[in-house]
Amino acid sequence: MRIWRFAYSIAVKYGRFVASGNLVSHLHNSHRGLKMAAPTEKSLDDVPEVEIDDGTFKYILMKVYPSKGTEDVSKTIVRGFKSAGYHVDIYDDVDAKLHKMGLEAECIGGGRIEHDPDQKSINVYGYSQGYGRADHALTAEILKKRYPDYEKITWTNEGY
Image (cartoon, rainbow, N blue to C red; front, side):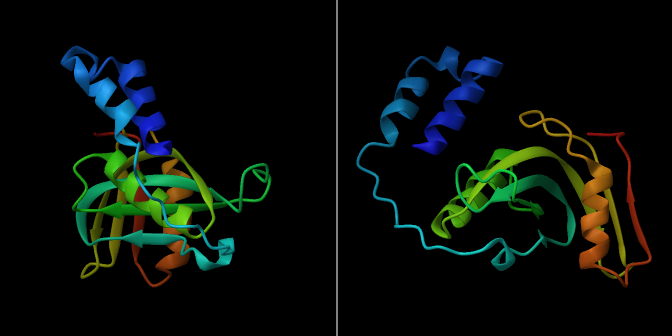
């Protein structure tokens, strides 16, 4: 149901998919009959702050909450994968995993990452058309905690 709401809001907000006629209707009806696994209670400590691939790829910055109504307690995480064609692909994958853990999440922006483990360097840049620009300075700080031995972790608001 949450995926449908997100897809529908993107379709309405950006005017995408609406021209295809039945896609919005399909999104509305596609959640019917789906069986979701019952969530288990996990804590924010069970969620790694960083999960990224090597190479160049899209990433998102997310806030994770224990449950609805507890937004004052959160953890900010970075996720990025080469396999993702769109930022929403990352969100859908991570959100489903977090939901199974009994956690809630929201995307607070996106961009791109160039990660070269051989050179021990990471560059954070760009933006997401769907989620907007992530706070790259915050992303870089989170990455520095995960990769303290890296010689160069930089960020810029330039580029796509």
